Image (cartoon, rainbow, N blue to C red; front, side):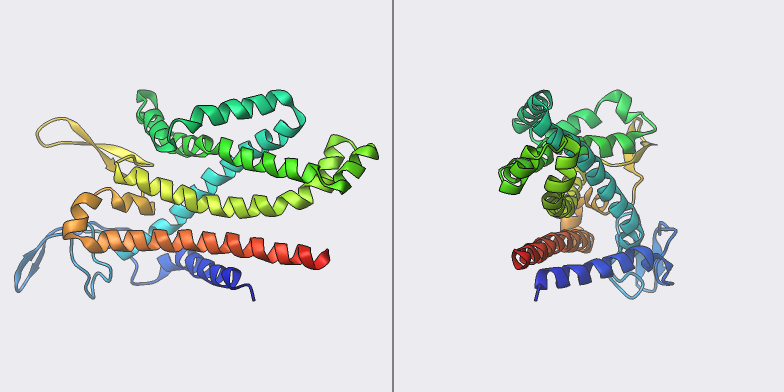
Length: 296
């Protein structure tokens, strides 16, 4: 029995139910209202509110229900992850496959990996997103997604190119070359059947990696989408405008001491999602490996 695939698929179903059906549950506040001070018999309560019957997972410092934030933000979070990894693998496929057929593209791939090998991805993204024309751009969210996608393109392309090199050494591929197949026919008939499974599993794994990277950016105050807010004593500050899960971690240094439920809930859903992707990727890999061995 493929337990990884079974558990991962079950966890994915629950995640999708929360994403597409959860917002329509009556208990969930789809409008994400900000609740200020609350007057009770014991005095005045100000946010963040601790977990209770009114707030099952408590509230954040703006008085927003954490459970509603997680449920409503699930769709945006998954969409952003899917967009990042889709762009990354589209570019990586061009570089990885092209590097096998073209020495110029192979040199470009080597240069790409050299550029990003000595600079951590998080530093490069912070530098790019701090450029003035991006900060004030109306398409900042698109720039953010593109930047995160492109910094990891070299790694994904290198993995794909390595897989193609391994497949090219197989005897049946050599037979296709001898028979006079065109590069396109050779790829479709001989390379693609062996590459599609690693592509799918790596695609799923990279969604977990992207989510973890987004969480790191939120901790240091780099937001996917924000607006400018005037400060009382002059100046402006950036305010997060996104409901994506990692954005709840932007006050982690304060919340970890006085509103632990915000941190625990956010880290919990992020860890759950990353584990879902990991189990799915591992389960699919095991399934097709056993299927291939059975055929052999």
